[in-house]
Length: 208
Image 1 (cartoon, rainbow, N blue to C red):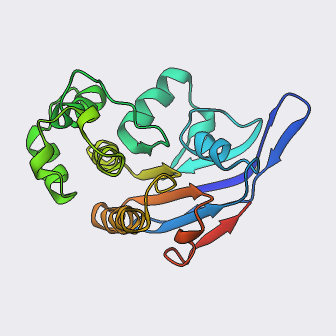
Image 2 (image 1 turned 135 degrees about the vertical axis):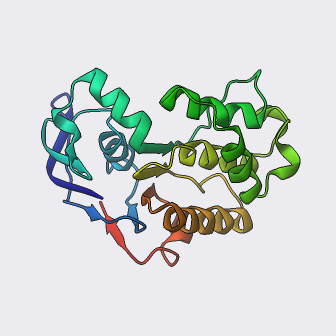
Image 3 (image 1 turned 135 degrees about the horizontal axis):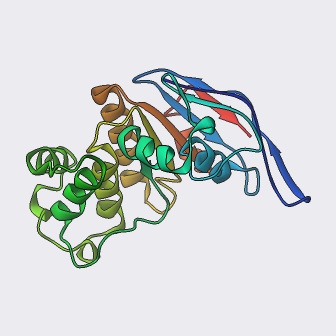
């Protein structure tokens, strides 16, 4: 589902990264670990097309996203890549359900209300559909982010430090949900983290 080859990236002349090749199939999970400054978030941004490598290939299904124009990449990302970022960015004036529905409308032009509701209920948010994001706990906001990332059934789901701000109970709950939903939707899941609690949860790992 996703494979990379010979990816390199640098910030100016001082900070340069040469990343190992990765390959993850549909429904599989990959944990990428490493200390601060090792390039975990940079790699995730490259895989998601938010930044471009200096050289190398990033192939999602049959598309090498490195070769796409900015417009093509935006379209491809909306349809094929789900992002769960460290900071959950929501439209503050929209409730939980509306925020997830908005993600489907932006990517497809259709409002997948029933599907959004079903996803949120599956993530134990049935009682919070019409609350504002600011009324939720950090763990609940993280689950809304997961629903929003999965609403378009992406081929690739990228999660950046999804458990770092959660206590043990919620960290393992979010990890289990991500893994289960990736298998359910046939999505390749890549998690980048320094959270040592997840090392025993995901056997397929790369350390930067």
